[in-house]
Amino acid sequence: MSHQKFQECMDACVACAAACNYCAASCLSEDDVKMMTKCIRLDLECAAICRSAAELMSLGSEYSAQLCRLCADICRACAEECSRHEMEHCQVCAEVCGRCAELCEKMATAA
Image (cartoon, rainbow, N blue to C red; front, side, top):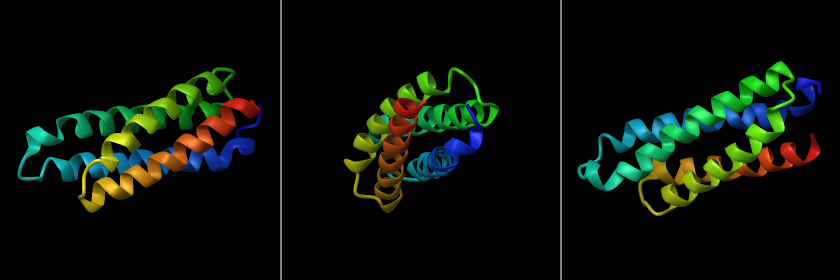
């Protein structure tokens, strides 16, 4: 499978990883960091899986579709958690994660 075929998904994964990293770092600056623990954990997990998915897609790996299915699940969980918080960084992260989940699911089905 050609990696160019999934460029939009790779770009979404890279953008999602960046948004999640920013969200996690911003959550650490909140007054009640303990309340943000689940959000921070999911941000870090989501960023890690998004980077991995983008890398496997760029390699044209036969495992890209499987990893993208998992990536979509984690992105959805992160989006759901982030949407529960009113902070702008969480709301932006939720939106970016939702978009990434859609594209990863589409990629996994098309592969």
